[in-house]
Image (cartoon, rainbow, N blue to C red; front, top):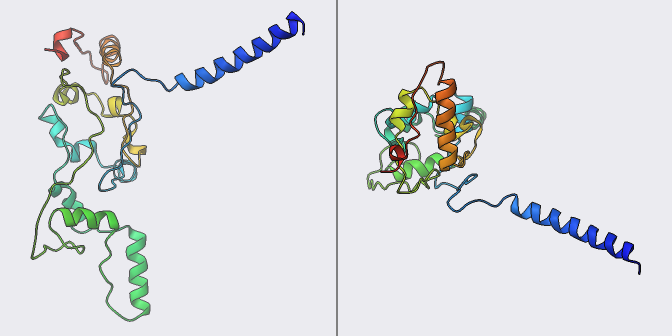
Length: 217
């Protein structure tokens, strides 16, 4: 076999090897980078439905973001502002109403599977009424965005500056299940601060610090 043929075979093999390695390492990340993390939650919650279709403001549920460094998980009473009455999708309620009318009876209370889990955790029956043997328990939500302990981040400063939630959290109004949109790396944050200083935030000039001690102290 000639040297030219051997070189061609070697070249093709090298090319395929590079393609395989490129595919493997294209998803490689630095340690601690949880970009794309999308855990299942104990109770399914659709940001697409609530923030997207229903157009509920982020700060209606995550009101702590205006007064605390942590946005926090909304307390149950915020959910109950709507879900003390709304227990299932409109289609399921309508279907039960039509079936009850056809069977000449009162419609039964329809509660979605996920809301039944929520009601059970806060001591309510599936129909939303308080249980006689009411035992409440915290829902063990799985944290999606989790910065290292050596990083300080304050939601208050960002909300006050007019930074929209989607800047860091991505298009949450399209997410059926919440996921980490950005890398949240130091470089990503510093570049965001630099860009904000250059272009402003929502038409206003800002002075976003890029000093190390702002986030690490």
